[in-house]
Structure formats: C-alpha cells, structure tokens
Amino acid sequence: MSTVNVSVPATTANLGPGFDCIGAALTCYNQFQFALTEDTLNPLKITVTGAESHRVSIDQTNLIYQAFVNFYQHLDKSPPSIAINIELGIPLSRGLGSSATAIVGGLVGANELAGQALSIEEVMELAIAIEGHPDNVVPALLGHCQLSVGERGNWQICQVPWHQDLIPVVGIPNFELSTQEARGVLPKQLSRADAIFNIAHMGLLIRALETANTDWLAMALEDKLHQPYRQSLIPGYEAVKQAAIAAGAYGMVISGAGPTLLAITSPKQATEVIKGMETAWQSLDIIAQVRSLSLDTQGARIFY
Ligand SMILES: Nc1ncnc2c1ncn2[C@@H]1O[C@H](COP(=O)(O)OP(=O)(O)OP(=O)(O)O)[C@@H](O)[C@H]1O
Ligand SMILES: N[C@@H](CCO)C(=O)O
Image (cartoon, rainbow, N blue to C red; front, side, top):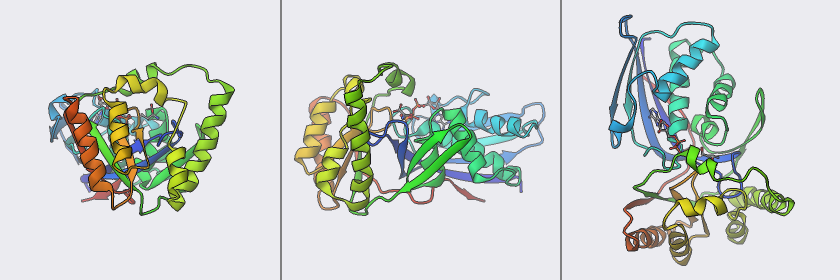
C-alpha cells in the first residue's frame, strides 16, 4: 500500500484545573493524505486546502513532516519520498490542538506506511516527546477524554468518562495566540495554597464529568495555575464567561492555551449559550465562531 489517509480530531486541553494532563477530543477534524513517491530529487511535496491554508509551511519545517521524519529516525531509517495533502478543518493556534493533529497525523501516517512497525503506545510516546506535554496528543490519538500521568517512557493513560448530558461549546475568536506565548506568562512557582486548590478541583472535575453533577462541575472548572495569568491575553474573556454562565453554562474555561473559550452546558441550554457567547464577542467588535461540538470517541482514524 502506497497511500494512506489519516483523520485526527481537535482537542481541548486543561479543562480548567488539569493543566498539561487532561484533554478531550472534539468532533472537528484535520485530514492528511500521505502518498509515497519515487521522486528522490524532490523528496517532499506538500499541498494544503481549507481555511488558513496559506499559513501552513510547505517545506521541511512543516510539523507533520517533522513528525513523519522523527518516526523514521526512531527506526534508524531514512524517510521515503512523500507527497502530503493537508485538509485543514481546525483553526491554527486557537487552543484546539492543531499542532497535536499535525504530530499525531505525521506519526500515524508514517507508521501505517511502514506496516505498523510501532504499537499505538510507542506512537503515543513519540507524540508526547515531540509536543512536550500529553494533554492534546493523547486524546487526538485515542479519542475520548484522557488523563495522562507519568513521565517519559512511563505513562499511565486513563480514559475519563464524559457524561452525555455535558455539551462542549467552543467560542473561537479570529485572533491567534501561540502556545509558546501563552506559556510564557505563567509563573515558574506556585504557592502551596494554589497547588492544593488545583489538586482538589481536579479530583472534583473527574467525578463531575462522569456524573454530570452540575454543582460539582461549576466549581471544578475553576483553576489557579494558568487561567488567571492568561485571561489578559484574551480580549473579551470575562464578558464571554459571564454571558455563557448567564445563558446556562455550568462554567467556562480557556481551551488549551487559548484564545478559544470552552463552555460546558446542557443539551437544552446549548443554543442559548451559543447566542450569549456570540453576542458578547460581537459587543466587543470581535469576530468569533461559536458552536457546540460532541466528544470524539475514535481518535486518529486511518482510511484508504
Ligand atoms: N496542519 C498543520 N500542518 C503543519 N503545521 C501545523 C498544522 N497545524 C498546526 N501546525 C503548527 O502548529 C502551530 C500551532 O501550534 P500551537 O501549539 O501554537 O497552537 P494549537 O496547537 O492550535 O493550540 P493548543 O496547543 O493551545 O491547543 C502552527 O503555527 C503550525 O506551526
Ligand atoms: N496544556 C497546554 C495545552 C496547549 O498546548 C497549555 O495550556 O499550554
């Protein structure tokens, strides 16, 4: 087989208190096609379609290709000549795990072309090493909501049940915030009180997601580790949060490193929450796309 297609879901990381360790896959996708070529003079050809396609590099710096090459380096082999077609469905640098889709897509495509030389656990390990933290790449690969605990070479991955009555609503503004910039504003040290706050809220979050106990969820989404420092990088954060909660959301958090904002609500209130968040962005003259999504339960999918 010389051509393989891989579809990888968007992911929302952190979910409030779970900085760098929890993330959920959402029903919005990037698609990648990998076709082996015989062209040794031009070993890489990349084409990109979809919104923001002009912003993706089409040379060897492309993150998908870097992950692809990383896979072959891991096997001590040279990468084959390859044509990669990228169909972007997930906006870039918005906190919806676009970089994780590129890393997972590149690795899964390479693994399939290499006859599944690596197990899914080995692919996951490589993906975490490239991204530097597991919270996006693990659910992008496996689907569902995933808690990743451990360190290089020794990860425990725990699927966190997500109650079907909890609807994720994402508000995606039309400005970008790079993960690098959003990590740059975080303090190097935390007080003991803030550490205890996050440990307790994270424990509550796991049970709240499973049971849809909405009092628990409303409290569990609070965090003292990253959101207080990142809010000022996202114009409209407070107004959109207030509007979402007034319209029936249980809470609202920064999705990944932002600037996308993630509200969680009930199936009944989802339309009102979307309207409320839209109106709040509009009143600040910020263009944003607000929509409800579902939990993706498949992760990276291979098809021919
Ligand atoms: N389909 C893609 N092909 C190649 N590179 C990509 C692709 N998608 C994302 N990237 C790379 O990832 C960068 C965005 O990564 P960044 O971590 O800043 O944002 P994100 O992954 O969208 O957000 P977050 O990590 O907060 O969820 C892009 O600037 C680009 O370099
Ligand atoms: N946990 C990461 C997710 C974005 O890559 C962060 O918030 O910086």
